[in-house]
Length: 408
Image (cartoon, rainbow, N blue to C red; front, side, top):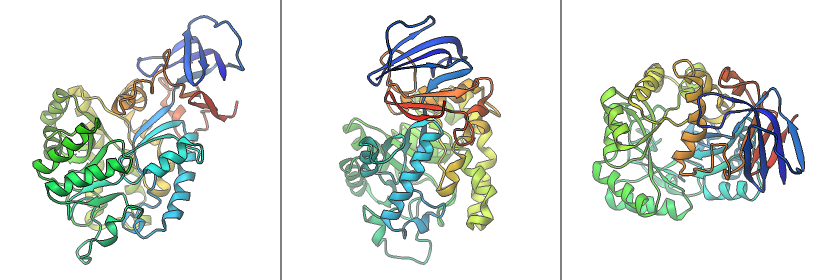
């Protein structure tokens, strides 16, 4: 199918501003031509996009598509088929917000990825880590102090976000197993977390040897490791042992930010989840030490963006939302824009995230790129609120050159 966009403003995913009066031809799932003048030849559809900005489809590099509830301990007891149906509805809503690709960092699996790719469910293109790997008492361990048996936590099809592994042999086996089961990369929990009951924020998790073993498996399989990290100590621990993408990074400092930049690592901050958890703490029963942990990382979020930007660390766009909180997925844009230029935030959700995925054909508008496109009413470089909400100001979305939303 051939679609021509005429008279659009263009944000190509890499620049600092929109380019007015552009013309773009989409053919056979690819971007065939980008021009400042009218494009000749026929097309199945011609879209007069005056007053709109054409930009790459958005990418969220930190999601949990199977997190049907903010209570992750309760998630383990939910029926798998219920979670599957919930996931399908949630992914469809993501697509309507303009997210044509997402990277799942715990819980999404090869079955969901295949269902989306085959058109059985409507949603973003999916990259997954399978279940995240965590140590006993770490950020995949929701047993608290009263449950002893790990039992069902290791069952593949239980709807949990992670599995528990200890020691180098177990880490090697688990990383290989997740890749066997269809993971695109490996996720580890290298720091304490907000939601889990027995791991303070200042705990680092996994030994250097365990992380190196997981990284060795990933690199042998031509992929990489992502790590949940908050503190400067944990970020450094993960990065120097070979981790490529550092998730969250709220408590990073200048010295460790420079280490990330020197090693070519990526950071994927996720501010909106902490904002949501604080606003809805009483509703979801987040109290005591868990709420204290959330407040600690929430208060440091905006300054961490400034630290990372100052060191030149490339930042991806992530949200980390859970359950019904996913409706705030696009609020991350507004939060980041408090301290970063809008164009930087937009690049995070387009070309930078495409680089994280190692898919140079995504996140950009250029000849031969995959035709994942969104048409935005207004100029998001000047007013990033064009992208917030539930996609009300995104009347048209293409995925692989196919129109998947059309409200023109």
